Structure formats: structure tokens, C-alpha cells
Image (cartoon, rainbow over all chains, first blue to last red; front, side, top):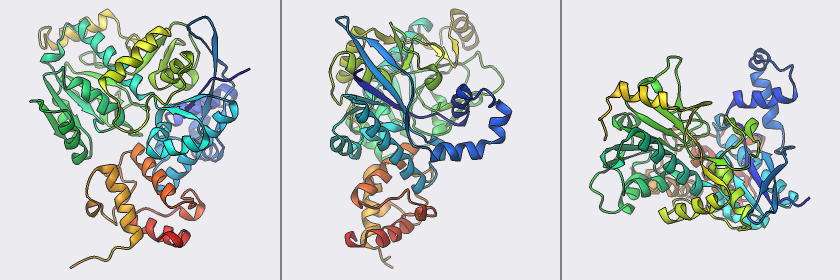
Length: 368
Length: 86
């Protein structure tokens, strides 16, 4: 059977790895997994990247089926704490790409941290391997922004009256979001650790009156809406820090926002950059998404390109995603049955009651 | 007082500086390269990928690369393993 596309991924963290291990070894209880955390992590990181047994079948326009495989790169983002371990993770990703080539894939979708292969050096490597890669960042950003628009419409909030903080603004997805949001919101706060990169981005955005640059993440807490796109391996924000009435679109993998034990009905947090598939392809064990018909934008983009038989490196390089590019890919996605996903906070759909309670807590007319 | 910087150290500073969009001289030689305050996790991996590309066939995932932390330490390692390039 021909393989049209491959998806490269990795577990988000040790809990995720544990859930994958428990699938094949039911005797791996939570307690056992916790007790053996160090040895299991070490064993996992010693293992080579591998092709999973997921047979991804996707209906394509015209009635044909395209086939795909999921490849797991055996590293955890939290383990990247030294040049040696970073190099080891890079090696796993290269290995994953070689496996994709061996599978006969015409395009590879780079999920999570594997998207480094869509950077400059990655492109060279992909050329060497003779394989087309796409980070999926264009579709991820486009989906997140449309999901945000959906929520704001439900709240009856107008973006042009809002302050939006963009965490990880100098990253590829962050830059794409900045290009769109700078044209639409009242005030945009670009937040990241590198001031120079942020200043350069602000210059690129042109003479916008209210685009600010901040390296202190706490400044983001002043915003009505936080769009979190950092590639941090651990949460950078905690829900307890957030002001009443804050909306958060979290695109992180692993997540950028950590939830405390106390529910916060006075804030609205949703997972952004997720697509709904008309024909489900079950990747939930690997994506940890709440339904079979949901998939991350980074994977969806490669699936859409494969279904359209457009085997091209749609999202590569850093900071190359334009508003037009996002428009193109989301339209192509729609033609293949991929639309912005309904809003979920973790595994829970955000329902009308959540919105009502939120509005009651923060004052209905705050941002209309 | 001027500080002596080797060719390899300078090249590493340039790689990191390009990622951070700053001047190479602003990249501290003795700061831990993997410190979250300097580079995020994705940037770290991209920098390492770039270093391996520029100093090929050096392998930073090798066991003897375990204790490398700073640019200075990395440079010394690269000088030992890819001396022809320095």
C-alpha cells in the first residue's frame, strides 16, 4: 500500500509517554509509571524513533484515499537541557525523517518540536534526504485565529476594542499571528525573551500605533486576550495568575498554561490551532486531543497537502508566514473537510453555560 | 581590557547571535547555552542543528559531549573534534 504522507511527533511529557506505554502494557499502572520514571524515560530516549501501527486513511477530494503513517521521535521536550541532549533529539528527528522516506511518503508533517526541521538547516537536510517537509505552522496559526474569532463572537467582544498579548511572538507561529492581529486588535503586546527579535518584528509590522514589545511575561497579564505560542517545554503561565475576564488561546505542545486545582470559571482557556476532520482519523492516543475527529494543525496541514496531492513545503523557514498564506491553507483545508475545531478547554467542550458564567463574572459589556 | 576569543568561539557566537538577532559580541561565552533565559527549547535545538551542520561531522550527541554547557566549553570540544575547521 502506498504511503502518501507521514506525521512526525513526540510525547508532550512523561505523563503522555506513560499513557502510551500503558496502552501496550496494561500492568503499567500510574503508580508503577511514577516509581520508574527515570528508568522508563532513559529507556525511551535510548530507543530509536519508530513507525507506529496507526494506519491513517484520509478521503481525498475526488473520492480517492490517501494513506499515512505516524512516526514517533523518542525524546521528551523537558529533557532538552544540554547541548548533548538537544543534539540527541535532533538526531531522533532526522531518523524520523529517514523512516518517512523509507515508508515512501511524499510529504512529512512536523509536529511539536520536530518542526525544527522546517528551519534553514532542516531544509538542507530535507533536500539531502529527498523529502518534502512542512511544519504545519501556517494552518496552526490560521486555525487558532479563527477559533479565537469564534469565541469572541460568542462573547460579543470586538477585537478592535481588545488588548491582545502574544506570547512567543518572535517564533514562527507567533509572527504569523502578529501579522494578522496587528491589523485587527486595539493594542498588541508582543511578548518573548529576545527584545531585539521583537523590535525587528514590530518594525516589520509597519507603523501600527499600539504594538508594544515586552520581555517580561507578567506584562501579558494586563491583556484581555492572551495567545500563547511559545515552544517552552514547561508551562510559562499559571491560571491562578490570570485576571478575571481573561481569554487564553493556548497553542503550546506541551501546553503553555498550567491549570491549578481550583476551577476558574471567570477565565476562558481553549486549545488553539486544532482542526476538526469531516472523516475522523484516530490519533487521540498520540495527540491527547478529546475526540477522534480532532487533529493538530501541524499534522492537518500535511494531511491536507497530501489529500490535495500538493506535495510542497508549504510552511518552512522562520517568519515566512503571511496573512495570505494562512488564508490559502485554511481554504484548502476546508476543501478537504478540515475546519477550525470546536472549542475545548482540555478535554471539556466550552459550552453556552461556560460562556454565560464567564460573562457574568467579568461583566457583560467589558469589551463590546 | 580586550578578551581573547578563539575562531571557534566567534563562530558559535555568530550562530547564536543570528538566532537571537543580536550582535555576536553580545552573546556571553560563559553563559549556559541551554539556559531558558537565553534560548527557548526550539531555538536550542535549531542552534545545535546549525552547529552540527557547520562543524560536520562532529556529533554533539556523543557521550563525551555530556558535560558541555557554555559556548566556551562547546568551542573547546569542537576544536578537539573538528580541528581542521577551527
